[in-house]
Amino acid sequence: MAINYDRVVTQSLAKQIAEQIRSAILQGDLQVDERLPTEAELAARFNVSRPTIREALKRLAAQHLIRSRRGPTGGTFVTRPSTEEMSDALTGTATLMVSLGEFDLDSISEARREMEQLCLTLAVQRRTEGQLAELNAALSQQQQPISDEEFCAADIRFHRALVDATANPVLQFNMYTVIEALQPLTNMLANRFRDREVIIGHHQALYNAIAAQQIDPARQSLDQLIDYLTSQYSKALAWKQQQG
Amino acid sequence: MAINYDRVVTQSLAKQIAEQIRSAILQGDLQVDERLPTEAELAARFNVSRPTIREALKRLAAQHLIRSRRGPTGGTFVTRPSTEEMSDALTGTATLMVSLGEFDLDSISEARREMEQLCLTLAVQRRTEGQLAELNAALSQQQQPISDEEFCAADIRFHRALVDATANPVLQFNMYTVIEALQPLTNMLANRFRDREVIIGHHQALYNAIAAQQIDPARQSLDQLIDYLTSQYSKALAWKQQQG
DNA sequence: TTTACCTATTTGTCAAACAAATAGAAAATA
DNA sequence: TATTTTCTATTTGTTTGACAAATAGGTAAA
Image (cartoon, rainbow over all chains, first blue to last red; front, side, top):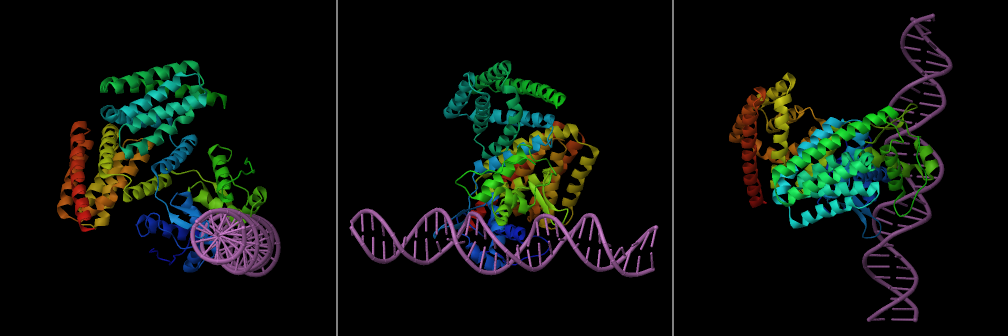
């Protein structure tokens, strides 16, 4: 435990304290799973009240940097950030930015096309039997008479499995954002029967090419899929604007 | 203002309330820049105390979803998430994950190589004179006798300018992560004179190719740069492990 | 030996108050 | 009248002190 308990000026105490603990974690002064002092002790050391300390800790908890437990062996502990949690948080903000129009459809489509092509190239080379099975499972489920929500969930599973086959956690981390950022739009399409058929067709072609480890057919299928999705998204958005 | 003020069980009140307000924002029930009720009123409506409400609000503030101001016209407002803030937050978590070893060097290098090549291809086609000037400014600064910190900052500016030239905010958003995730490692190299010369050389070649809009030379230069960086990183890491 | 209970510790929540910032109204001044 | 100053109401920021709830470990009873 090595924190500097001094404070500077011109910001709320809680925020300052959160920043200090945060940077102590980021700089490795606080190890993962290390226990912080009790809230009372932190309050004493920082010379603030316990509610103020708690506000600071809640900020960090919201960033998944710490977790708390009650009881004698409880307290506040530094958390090892899991890829999923971070990914979820990232996805949440990305979704918000999409719904607020920070990202336009063209940018999203382009980014997805290029990045997913990139992942696909690696996936074709590296895919394991297990990942192939996951792709197939997602595909099979999409062919069942399922609800819109389930269809979309299966869609996301298919593309995540594709990304997982790159065996590169950094690419995964980034791609999850782009894939899920488009989910609200995919939802709009899922309830149309013809769209489902087309999507499934492209997924099937994609799966076959990945299974056979044929790069060019795979890239072609993905291009067609994204062409199709993009055009449908445009139509759906135009329709929605006309309505709203 | 349309929030459901009911609560469910089995989690801290502050967390539940934060979740509710959060989803109200994400679902658009609370518009951007809309003012939330005062803390006292929220406390009354949720039937909890003000400190509890405040802990909930601090969680949301940590996610840049709300901001607060004091005074008669003050209060709590829904924030439009800025690309920079989100990018910074993302970068922060990515940096943490790198420093905790969640991402290995190979994955980072590969992701950066592939994604930056992708950006480069677009950048060569789309770069404006202004972006060219920014690239040149960063490059010129690296040639000056500056401190290690300034050299690294200029390095990041160079690569960010490259990414900006794609004119695609989604790619920018994702690439910033990958670029800055490597900053700690770049820091380790910056103080060696020979490394600086090599990096500057590659940057110069990269700049020339982008300026001339020649894709293949550009891609080649970037490949060489990343080859070099990767090999140096490996050495630096091995040396560090030997020491520690 | 096992079970039940008790106790200490720590986070979670509440209550009431004061401090600080600040916009707008009111009053004093030119 | 126009301008500056002062006052006041409102809202977040912070403090104090207390009690509730969870829980691990020790203690006493069966």
